[in-house]
Length: 330
Image (cartoon, rainbow, N blue to C red; front, side, top):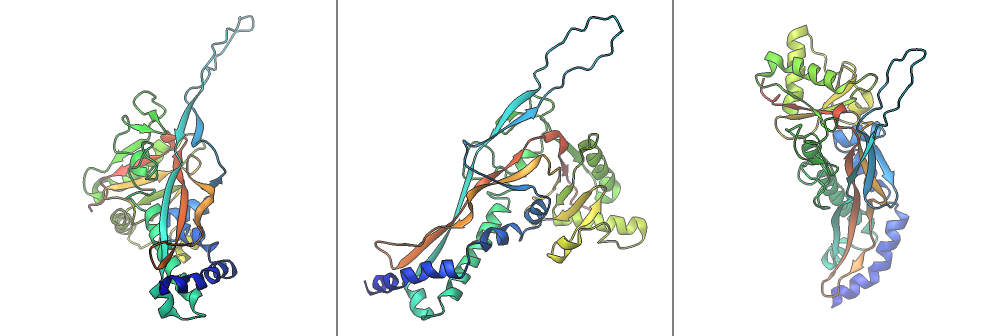
């Protein structure tokens, strides 16, 4: 009971600290800038905040009206096209606890609460970073629209099959334009790795629409640099690189018009070529890694708050994006 009394006396103080120390506003900035993919998406303006709505519906272009030539006296007969169809992504929800016990407070001492809270919040940041930016329930996962507990991941959006499965609740099997591109290295990288990467880039490019990010695993990135070095007899790790991304601790190099970089979340034997006009991360306003209020437990000597995140990763144009397979072996 004494512990709860101690926590009662410090409850208002902790709430005041959270406001005065301005710890909360840094949460999402820290989460979204501490993985390579999230950093790059944010830099490209591809992480967007959105207000409340019934999930995330979008229209996509499925067919075009036909342009025809005609003679001067010809009667033109319009053939009405049905150019658009709808897709829908769900709001996904993540939460991470920040728990302060009575013993934590006893051992901290008055006046040191900001440091204690900062330590717990930094731990929550790391957990949220790993979740949002990872392959379990995050942006590289196989999550789809059947549940709200996992972000719709690139393993689903740009899967190993271009003709099966649902993305945004729309089947790839029934709509040819709703299919992404795929290139399979299928042998050692030094045999045809760069050729397959180049082919994938070309396949994802249509008129003035071209990919701008190429996120791969570490093995594929190392293989690319090794092959470039072998081919051109020079080491060029920062050729056409993004210097701000390098300064942030994320190595990268230019590949055609895209930025090629590794991310620990990318699964083995996969790399994703992305056009950020069509793949975005949507974050719900007010749930952007927001820290809730600390609440006193009724039967425990602690205070608990949660960091909440709501949003999803969406795609509005599959054919402008692609997956590189089996580029891990040199």
